[in-house]
Every structure is written in structure tokens, then in C-alpha cells.
Length: 220
Image 1 (cartoon, rainbow, N blue to C red):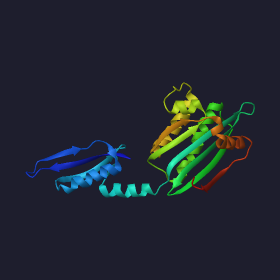
Image 2: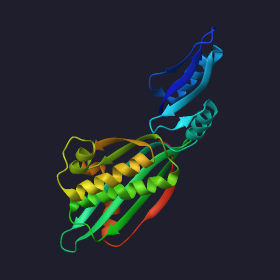
Image 3: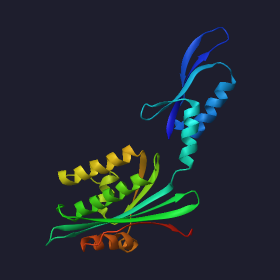
Image 4: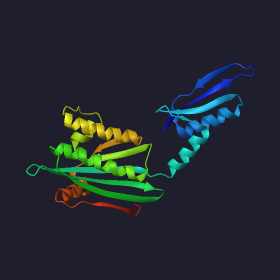
């Protein structure tokens, strides 16, 4: 989490002035705050995050400790399948993450029958995966998002413009979810043969077999 440090500086003669640091990571900011406190000339020191939330040093220390216990190295791989004849869609997503030293994997899929094309199914697949990410108590970290859809990856990363209102609505939903979870996305396009697991889940959903599973993996 990025924060700024704000404090009131008091000179030996009693002159007071508010001071503000540059934006920095929370660990670096806490080190700075402790160093400032050692001078004995700081009053009302606090931290301000990018949402405008105010934190005391103790609150930020507690938050940082809890964050270290939360899932890390989050990765989501998604794929969507769309059947033109039946107008049905299958959405599949695989989520990898670490809890401490334990590597875990969640597999989830869902069938949908109200989507209009394959691009929408791809967006929906990512959204399905992000709904699952909500369940693992993750917040304020990076998330690697991988898919073989150039449309989804390039539009979400800002490389391509979005002209279709339908896809723009899905983009808004996804970006809202990322903001709510304070996740910083890194988008990566992958080849289809690197996306077999998510694709298989999407096809299974299209055929009516829905899956939701979580297992611990052997660390590689």
C-alpha cells in the first residue's frame, strides 16, 4: 500500500508547521515515521493512503502484519467458450496463490446463457474468477491476470480502445472489483496451448458440468 506521512514539526522555539513526505510504500513510511519520532519534535503524525484513509502508526503496523499473513503471489488464468447455435457460454478460471509457504489452486467454472459472443464470454470468465478471488481474503497486492483473448487483455491493459458498450460494461465490473479489493492488475497474453486448464473448465461448463474445487499443490 502506498501512503504519505504527515506530521506537525515543532521547533525548539515553538514554531509549528505541517510537513508532508513523498508517496512511498507502507514499510518505508513506517521506518521514516519512527525516525521522525526520535527527534522529539513531531506532533500529530499520521499516514494517508491513496483512498484518503487516515492511519496511526499502530494501525498501520497491525494492518501490515495481517497483510503478511494473507494470500500472496495471486495469479488468475481465464478462458471463455461460446456456442453460436445454442447461444450458451462456458466460463472457466484457475486461481493460484500462496498462503505462507503453501501453494494453492482454485478451479471454478460457470455456464451462462445470456451472453452475446465469444468476447463477452471471455470477459465473463475473468469476472467469474475474480468473484472467487474475493473468497480468499486477499487485498492490496498485485494480481497477475493471464488469458489467450487478445481483446480482453489488450483492452483491460489500455492497449486497445473499447468501442462496444457491451464489453465496456464488463470492463467496468472487472475494474470495480479490482478497486474494491485494492488489487493492482498485471495483464499478460498467453498462447492457447498455455491455457488448457482454464479452457477445459470452460468447455465442461458449456456441456453442463460445473466445477468448484480448491487443493494444496506440491511446491515446485
